[in-house]
Image 1 (cartoon, helix red, strand yellow):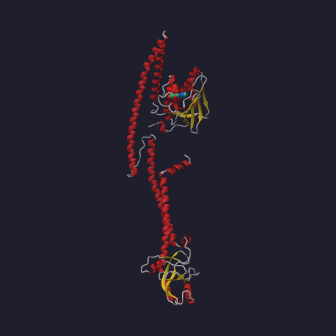
Image 2 (cartoon, rainbow, N blue to C red):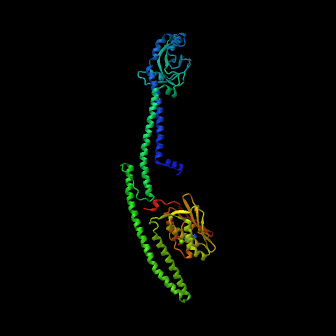
Image 3 (cartoon, helix red, strand yellow):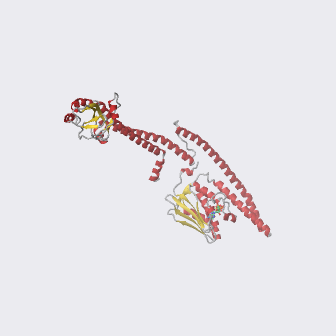
Length: 500
Ligand SMILES: Nc1ncnc2c1ncn2[C@@H]1O[C@H](COP(=O)(O)OP(=O)(O)O)[C@@H](O)[C@H]1O
Ligand SMILES: [Mg+2]
C-alpha cells in the first residue's frame, strides 16, 4: 500500500475522525477559556484597584478644596495639584461640573477639557453599595477605565461639581508585558498548558483503546464476509461493542452451520450428477455401437438421414454427459487446490500437441508465443490444463481454414503472468461477450453449428475463480477473439489452498 493510500485510509478511520473532532473542540475550548480568563483577570485587577483607591478622590478633595474655591484654573489650584502630583506623577485629575463635563484637567498633558463623563457611572460609584468595577470613559484616553470620584465645590460662586481621579496609569497592558512581569499569569499559563497536554494524552489514549476494539471487530466481520466463516470476535467486556461482538458471534455460528449444510447438499448434488452422467454413458455407448453397425448396412436415403440424426444427437448427449461428469467430478469449487510451480510454456505446448491432428485436418496453424522472461506460474496444473484445453478447443472450433490459434504468455506485472488464447476465428458479437461464460450459454453461431454444451467456459471461470483470477474476453466479429487471464508466479496463499 502506498503512503498516500495508507494516509487516506487512516484519515477515513473512526479513530482519526474522533481525534480530529476532539482536537478541534479542545483548541476551541482552551482558546475561549484563555480569552475569558485573561479578560476576567484584567477586570479583577481593576476591581481591586478601584476597591482600594475608592476614597482617593475624597482624600484629595480635603487637600485641594481651599484652592478650588479660587477656581478650577486658578494658579493656587494648579500649584496644589502639582504638589499632589509630585507624590504620584501618574495620576490624572479632572474637575467636572454637575453634568459631568470636564472643566479642569490636571493630567500630565492637561488634555480632555470639555469632554463629558457619564453621570450614571459617577452616581453608581457614589452610591452606598456600588457594584465594582465601575467604568467610565477616561477624558484623555478615550477608552474605559476605573476611577475615584468625590463631590466638590469650586470657584467664588461655590458651584457644585466633582473631582475625578483616573486610577489606571496611561501605560499599555499587553500580553507580552503581563508574561514578563506577572508570575501569577505565568504560573497559570504553564499550569493550563500542562493540564491541556494531559487531557489530550488521556483522551487520545482512551479513544485509541475504544476504537481499537471497534477496528478489531470490523476486521473480524470483514474476514467473515470474505468467506472465513471461522472468524469470531473475542469481545468479553459488557458494553455496546462487547454486545455487538457477541451478537455477531451468535450470527456467525448460525451462518457457519448453514454454509456447512449448503456444502453438504452441494456435495450430494454433485455426486448425484456424477453418478447419473456416468450411468448415461453406458447406454449411449451401446446406442452408438448399434448405430455404427446399422451404418454399415445398405440403407435407403431416408433411413440413413434418420440414422445420422440419431448419431449426432446421441453424440451430443454423450458430450453433455461427459462435461457434466467432468464438472461435478472435478468438484472445482469444493476440492482443495494442489498448487505447484511449473513452466507454462511447456504446458501450452503439450495442450497444442493434443489438438495437432484436429488443427491439421482443419488447416489451422497452432502457435505458442512466449514473451515472458521466466514463464513459470504457481497454480493447480490439472485444473489449468483443463481450463486451457477448453479455451483452445473453443478457439479451434471458431476458426476456419487458414486461420491461426495461439497461446500467448506475457508479463502482466511483477507478481503475475498474463495468458491469452487468441484466434482469427468468427469472433463473438459484443452483446454476447458477457454471457458466454454462463452455464449452458452458447452463441447464436455455436447453436447453429449444433455442437457444444455451453459448459466449457463456465468450468474455466470456476477454475480461475479458485486461482483468484478471472476471464477477460476481447473479440471482434469476423476478425477473431482473444480470451485472457492472469496467474500468480509465486505459490498461492493458504486460504485458496484450503478453502473453508
Ligand atoms: N474463441 C471463441 N470464438 C468465438 N466464440 C467462442 C469462442 N469461445 C467460446 N465461444 C462461444 O461461447 C459459447 C460458450 O462456450 P463454451 O462455454 O465453451 O461452450 P461450448 O463450447 O460447449 O459451446 C459457445 O457457444 C461458443 O460459440
Ligand atoms: Mg467449449
